[in-house]
Length: 360
Image (tube, rainbow, N blue to C red; front, side):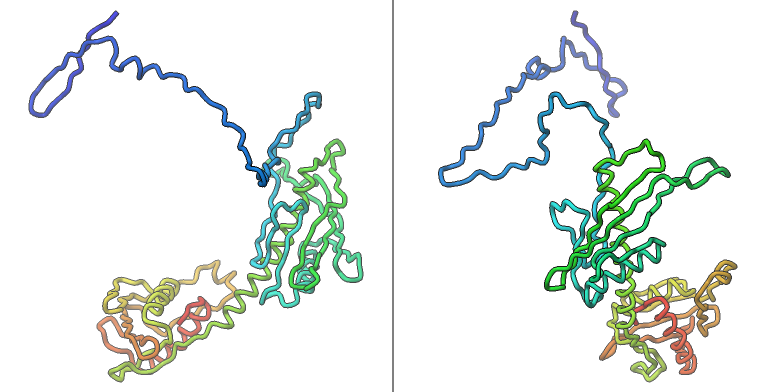
């Protein structure tokens, strides 16, 4: 049965207005009922004579197995080899737990570099590494245990679950600039004799151990990069005079670079930037000596660097020089510091620049 209903619209210009709409449906039948779309199969691509069809990937095909028994499927995804070091890479469609390293400026002779990292890794992790050949290309590990935490609260305990032994193989190319690092699982045993290791779990064990070795190489490489960067960084900040002959500091960095680096320096060493004027390259600061907490004094391994400044307001004005940038240090009222003050402040700032890796 069709019914009528009233829809009310409230309009600011009038108190009440109503509109009566009658009908059985608000939409036409051809919109409400959509026609079924006919799906047409796509014809097989015809390859012209003299040409060959592209290969179809078969890695996702499910082989027919109508009479195969139903087995338990492991729902864990396989692990992936991680090329953490900058000179490492993984080849596509690699079936083994293998990664390739290229010689770089940080490795020197690549094979001795990797041999040392493998042995150092075993020493750090307390894993027995036995060299199995005269060339030092094959290493065999001792038993490596894996533990899991069991229990609750005060009764928690680490329980050994399984053990593994691996073969670590270095595979140098004839030219010596490329060396492969491959890991193979030799033996595995569960503490619970009823458990079994699947093929996917075996590959996961190999990849996990390989990633730990690669992480060791990447850690050593990162330390070398930081050391070389620190050695190559030159501190150009010196004392001198501005254009008016007032005592000042001079850095070889450009005006914009010096501005950005000073922001980092202030942020980390007791300065509060109250205001700044980028058009005049001026900082308005308040300095207070950084407080050393109890834990800092107890565990801190670096000596605290104290600037020869009294607590209060200061200004730093940057001006472009012929080569680099001039830093004019002033008190809160804009008075230029004396040569003795600038010299003492410069010596302390050089220590902060080294400690915080500031480029000035």
